[in-house]
Picture 1 (cartoon, rainbow, N blue to C red):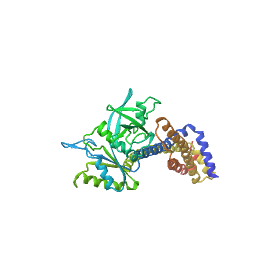
Picture 2: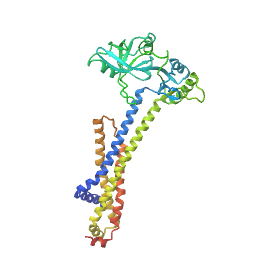
Picture 3: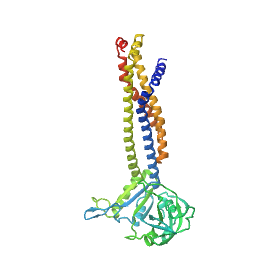
Length: 409
């Protein structure tokens, strides 16, 4: 009963000083809202990273050429021509953990259809490339090994390319496009994949058979050389072991000596995802620290208002002590007032934080996920902040001398 009456009294006092209480609550509200909003943005970013990782394919291992060195100067990543179709075929034979291996070459060039054109990446790929990348078609079908063997003049388009070179409503399937003045017939349109891990548009792509690209469309410096090799395993748990076996096979094939660095680079989905998620997590932690500072500022505000309240109510405290109130009762009253400020600020902050997360998604288009754990922790933290910063004013009020308090004007 005493606690309930104390809570009612605390609410009446806060209502009596609305402006002062509102300004005191502001720090708590901003802190709690910031924690919830920042965690929601961080969780949304992590989910987006996971989706982008999944868009690469299922249990995919990527192998790229390493950099060249000319006159002691290191070139760009992939500037060396070190990978071949034979490498990919050999990996399939000698690494049992691999279920499939494929390869690709890439060049950015002009795509023309009618009087419309665009510059897009053109990939010459093996017949199983789309399967390894888990890239489905929204219409049409993939090319086959027969198309690869005959260097068929066919192409599969990404959705961005379709939007760029075809009129709205115009059918892409069966249409003729030109790449480097070579006519190719469109046999399929890829399902949208969105942005890659590095922010590039994965749908801005044209896929053609590797043999067609090598012999008729893009050309190559060395027959059989590729820009990258893609491999997949049956289970994610096999990625690490498969990577090590690939490294050994590749070093042996390329005659890389024991102490020399690899002339290729191997990356897995797991490695790429860990880097991206660690970056996102670091940013989230930094933002949460800033939000916690706001909570601490709000706690200092609570301490300040309670110290002022102790001064203003000194005579009241003396009267209560004179009629039998114990020091514990006085201390409890001010602690409950402090915790009430924390609870009210926490509840308003939760509402503002959820609203801020939703507005971020609507206005900025960033994905956000409201974390229940973040909401609970932020609320508990706001109450703890109120309690902690209310201890000193409550103790000061409880230690007042009743006689001196009654004389206070």
